[in-house]
Image (cartoon, rainbow, N blue to C red):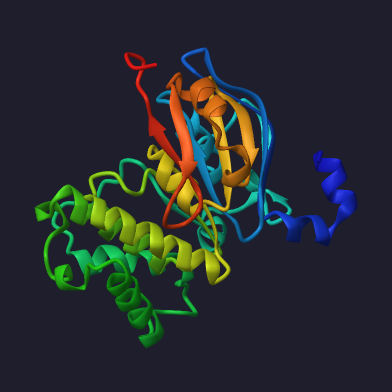
Length: 276
């Protein structure tokens, strides 16, 4: 749907998709990373973007978040061009967990998580007990409550990742963008975090995540976007699009796709080129 078509459709179109982009083109050092790409994030979906390294996944997410300005094209948030919002307005609507987040030196975990409440503060609305409860809830949900008094730069990579997720949760936005949120986490914490995201989605949040683990994506996503060479190869319900042919086309990996015995979702079993 074009911008003009969305405008003609009015409120109904905005309700159908909180975030969408049309004809995006993004270059790095004159090299095209994404060229003429259009995408729509379904409302109340858990959308996961997959694809090989350097295919444009994180670039697309950064463009959708407003961190990266495209050379051409438009990103629309809640029916309005993203570029026309003030930064604090965006932060009340859209939370972002970047791939490489850097904490200020000497900051404690609780203080970093509390920064997620900044978009909701103003001259007329200062810190409240409700903010305190939201921060405590975000830390409890991510298993970081016991780390509250520790300095962020003293933590392990996995602990820091969970703290950043807690800060994003404390922001309490209806739309949450996550760039490789399971990085540095062991398998148990990966599953805990993915299940937390599923719960947030069930509660009405729209999530968009970049993941490297194809089986996590197939198990937890309600909407999957497969990318290769800066273009979208396929998108839709993982049960419909995750096939052996798609995995080989996107990742150049021979595999078998079977039914996950726990969830019934597609389970990708790599064969490997030597055994193919």
